[in-house]
Amino acid sequence: MLRIESKGRGGSTVTVLDRLPDNAAFLDKLAGALKRSCATGGIVRRGTIELAGGMRERVRPLLVKRCWSAGG
Image (cartoon, rainbow, N blue to C red):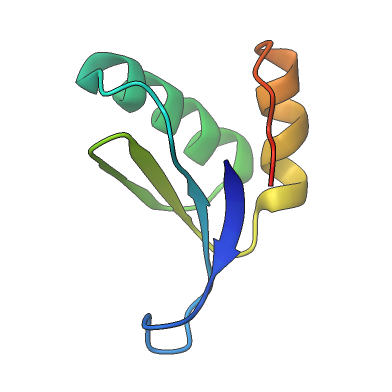
């Protein structure tokens, strides 16, 4: 699921990808590619990638290109 959150983050907006496989190597590789493509920072958590800023419209085509459905 792809969504944008700002509640509880001190007014900062983050783009959250969750319900991902709990595979650290996969998540690190995907997060690195997304952060480079969006020129933003981010963090990997268990089954979740969080990118700084409202990157939903940039991330969705990148996921589709990798054959992922980006619901949300």
